[in-house]
Length: 248
Figure 1 (cartoon, helix red, strand yellow):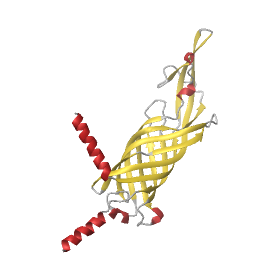
Figure 2 (figure 1 turned 30 degrees about the horizontal axis):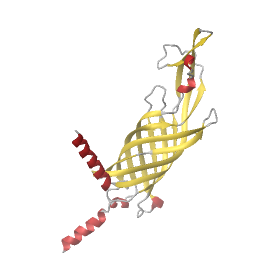
Figure 3 (figure 1 turned 90 degrees about the horizontal axis):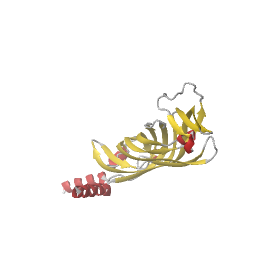
Figure 4 (figure 1 turned 135 degrees about the horizontal axis):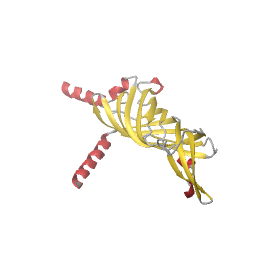
């Protein structure tokens, strides 16, 4: 088993060594859907247990710098297969408290790249449009806003109700978080930087969605504008060399 794992690691390292590196740099913004959270708060008053019900509508938003380093590992049917780390970092002010909050969106992703974004052949530099689509997994945390809804229909039997043990110091705000862990679905399109097809860099737009999986999580939607840097595999040079050898 150890030999198999070592062999797999060596193959991954070998692929990375011959892979074409690309990095996208820019800015990103993320917003979420609004979601109602229902709470059953259990406290004591002079030793007597008490239960109250509260409901809040939460939503989240944030913006920051965007970085997406990735490696084009192989080519399949005119498209390259790549793996990378799309990351966004930023700082914002909490809409209720005014305190600064650290924002992050950190993911691992695998993409299919076509057109100008297939870096496995410099023939693709002649194309006007580049595109990619992929899946990943990661964690997002942004500023969260909340609003009391005073929903009188909330009871102990309400679906997905969140129990808050006030006697242990918990409060409803502990459960109002912009943190979301789960699937990433994203894609993007690019054109040559400054519309110069001889330039290996590109400028583009990326869109993404991160569906909510937890009962107190929100679904994120967002976009990034970026400039993409990275060289192409020099297939034209190889073709010229092969042609010259055949003439001799």
